[in-house]
Length: 456
Image 1 (cartoon, rainbow, N blue to C red):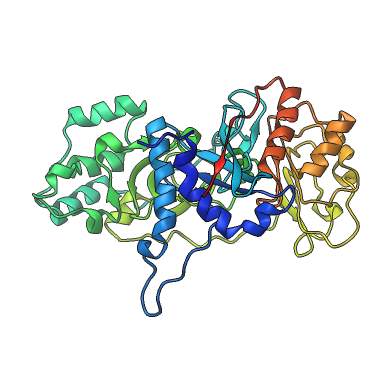
Image 2 (tube, rainbow, N blue to C red):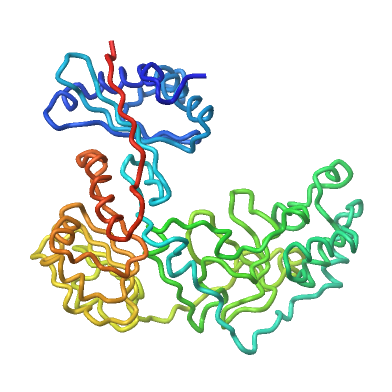
C-alpha cells in the first residue's frame, strides 16, 4: 500500500495539478489546495468532457481517478478519514512543496475545501437547535383515523404469508429504545417483522406499507444526537413551531420513532411529540437534506397503510417576524428592518451600499449567531456589544481586526472563518484559527506535514 506521507504517493496527482495550474503556481505567493477523503474529494482539476453522443465515463478522466485513488488507498491504510493539502512551487524548476493537513479535535472538517471548518471552542458544545427538546402541547390526541384492528386486518389480508414479530422480539426492541412501541407500530410488526430472510416467503412490504420497512432491530429514536448537524449549519437555523404546525420544528425528538425509509434516504417515523395542530402517532418524514424539522406524511399509520395517504395536509402559514434574517442587496434591506426581540440569527450577505452598523441589534436577548460577508461591517469591534453570541463567522480581515483589538467575544461556543476557497491560503487560515483557539485554551487546529520534491 502507498504511504500517505511519501512524496511518491502524491507525485501523479501533483503532476496533474502542476500542469493545470502552472501559471498560478509560478506566481509569487500563489498556491493550489484541495481535500481528499475515502468517500469523496475536492481537487481543482478540469474534467474532460465525454465524447459527443455518450455519457461521461471514468475512462474519460482515468489519469485523475488513478492519481486520487492512490491517495485514497493510502488514507485507508493509514486509518485516516481524510487529508487536506496545499501545493506551492519552490524556486527550483519543477520542484514543489506539499503541505498535508490533518485536522485535530479543535475543528470540524471544511465542506469540500482545504480550509478548516468550524472552530470548536468548548468541549461537547452543540448549536442551539440541537439542544432543543420538544415543547409540551396540552390536549393533543391520536387522530380519529388511527385504528389498530383495521390496520392489522388490512396487513394480514395484503400480506397473508408475512412473518410477524413475537412478543419477546417486541419486548427486546422496547428495552433497547427505552420506550414502548406506539400501538399502531406494534400492531404493524406483529403482522410483518420485515426481516430480510423472510422476503422469499412473502411480498416485499414496500408497496403495502408505503415505505421501506426496517427490521425491528433497526428501529431507532431520532433524537437530536441521531441527526448530526455541522455547527456551521445548525448555528444558522432556528427552531420554530407555530400554532398552525402539525410537526415541531426540531433537529430531533425523543418522540420520533423511525421505522422506515422512503428509498431515497429520508426517514419515516411515528411522532409522539406533535405540534399544536398535530396528532399523537402521526407519521412524519425526516429529510436527509435538511438539518432541522420534519414533514407530515399523514395523521396516523392506519391512514398511510390502509387509505394510502402520504401528502400531509395544507398549512396556512401565519406571518411572524423571522427568527433568521438575511440582510443583503436582494433580501432584507437593512439591519433595522431585521431587528426584533425574537431574532436569533443575523446573516450579512452581498452588500452594495455603505458598510453597516450593528447598533440596531445591540441588546437583543436571543441573538446568538452573526455571520458577515467581507466589507459589510462598518466597525467589527461593535460585535463586542452583542452579549449573547454563541457562534460568529467572519472573513479573515474582520477576525484580524478583532484579534488586534482584543475584542474577540469570550462567550462563543464555536467560530467560523469564511475564507475564499482558492484565493485565501489555507495555511494562513489555519494560523488565524490557532490564534482564536489559543484565546479559549484550545489545542492547535491541525498537524501539518511538509513534503518537497520534483514532479518530473
